[in-house]
Amino acid sequence: MLFGGFDHKIDKKGRVFIPSAFREELGESFIICRGIYGKRCLTVYSKEQWDMLVEKIGTLPNAKSSDVKRFLYDGAFNVEFDSQGRILVPPTLREYAQFDTEVHIIGMDTNLEIWDNALWQTENESNTLENISAIMDELNF
Image (cartoon, helix red, strand yellow):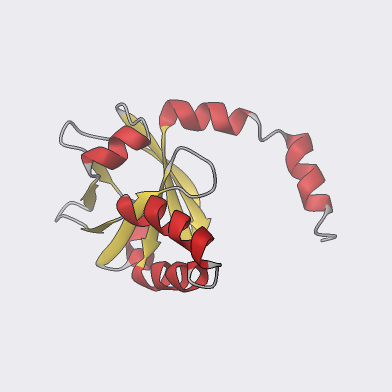
């Protein structure tokens, strides 16, 4: 399970360090792509999680699955860690996610999200204690 949040710098070449706990879960090779949940962030999937997502997308009606595939696959890249635990974020994804110099990496259970730090701060402001509490009430936990 991937969880926790970490702030890291993205260097001029577009490389960002991924914490070791996340690297172990992702494996040697994995997929980075645009986020698909209406947020301007990047999503990182292990090969296993990517295959599960692709299978689920295939269950959609053709017109819908084609739209999702075009959006998702056009911006999906296979990446690997360098010797220092960094990944190279392709320029097209850096532009999409509006990366500046600092990113916030979040473990989201089965995948990672990578946000520009300023965008993350803005997004996270809407996650008030009251909003999260109301959502948790739905779980009856």
